[in-house]
Image (cartoon, rainbow, N blue to C red; front, side, top):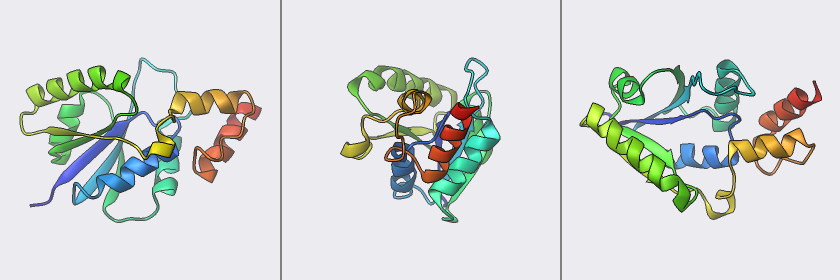
Length: 160
């Protein structure tokens, strides 16, 4: 039986922390779907298509990884793609309460869905998309924090 995991997020933009979790998730599943959420409550810097392209570039060409967009309930998306694992990253204790509630709700909606929490590499723990956007917006160097394509896209976006 093929174990399918979903790593959902807004990835606006993808960071090296996201890349780390993508690679490490492959130890838990045979196939990983990196799922970009369409969140109508947020005003993203990049379109879903741009974020998917950045993720594809940053993740490389591993055939076990695919990329999709989704809207609506994560549990329903997981059912649709046959996933039994949700991968979530925890950077700090403050992330835990929200993620814990979401994991329980997803299990309520899809009882065979398990949520696995991964902690990023210690040198990437401080990273978040919002911090990367803030640094880029004020002209800081984000190259250590993101893939070169993402750094270029941020520089271009904030130039215009």
